[in-house]
Length: 359
Image (cartoon, rainbow, N blue to C red; front, side, top):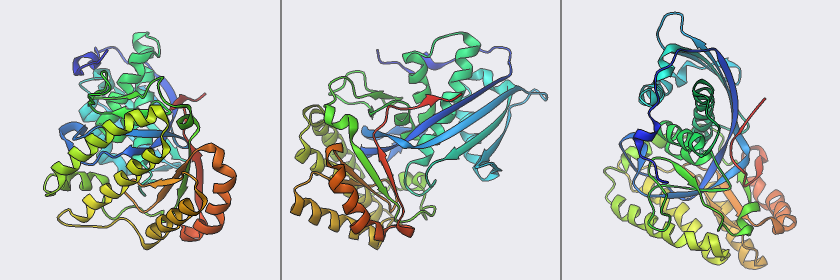
């Protein structure tokens, strides 16, 4: 059943102390979301692989507020990080309508990543997903309901308000976010699992993340989305993404890898084309990014192995391939591609099942 915003509005209740810890994965979009309306409503649907090892682990200690006012402290990698406070204040202000009980709490939030943040590997997605799941964990405790479909759907709904792509980091292995005519219960408000029709080849897909640049991006994703409002090619891009999503959905069912590769690589290049044609224009790819792509194309043609690339909004490259080709791919990446990475570093990952609660 598709839900509207009214489904997610909670009631007030007296605060109780509680602690919750969740692990949420990053995700890599195959159909890209770039351009949004207010409150993180996407201009086009997106479809993504949920990752397995690239995760954020977040714990929240909820204490009844002594002052009667909402407050929080945020720690990242065991250090107090006030730099994130503005973004978190915006998030909590936006979600208080849906979790109104939270205004009576003081929060101590502690978060760590297993991968570099703010470098184009969707760290805000995993971070906001883990944060939203911890909030929902307390709500389920306060109102005594099970961690059922509603629990995870509302977590996706809240996560989306913090970071659009975070809606796709709740479940796995493939999720879709945004209204789509081919999936009747899809929604702009939250992401859903692709479903039982997903071809088995995609349930164990591999993702090697080549760390070309581990530094923070010089243009944030928030700024990049805003620039789409004045981009002269934006409407054509939204139409292209919708059509590509319509085409990819049956491919995810059939397992047609040649067709999969064409759409996934086109989407990655289209995303970066929008950056280059914005005003002001900017480039997040690096020379080594292009070198990796060219090397991969030569390898794929010469070895006839169905490996492809995609990228998020950054210089790093995701190499995607079926698990059966691991013995050929790892030596190629280690010997031919790692030299283009910062300190030869790369992350060996794969599609995953989604977020989980930690002890």
